[in-house]
Image 1 (cartoon, rainbow, N blue to C red):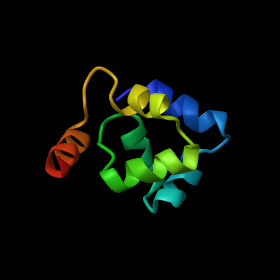
Image 2: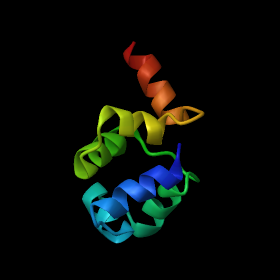
Image 3: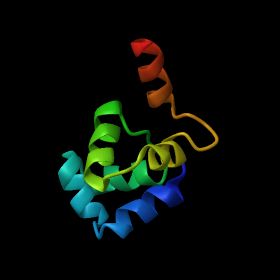
Image 4: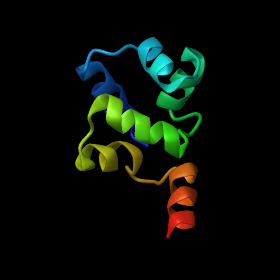
Length: 81
């Protein structure tokens, strides 16, 4: 995951980590750990982040699939294949 691109996308729409956490129904501390790449976003959270930040397909690939797939995304995709 490209944490810099995620932070930039969030900042570009003017949301704080606190606001994102509320929108995702998680704590700010949890959101911070996810944004830093310490903890993976689950598929529901990724879907909500895409919607909240109005991400394009290129944005999604650049953020969530940069250099390595997160284990959550990889396992979710393989289960749906």
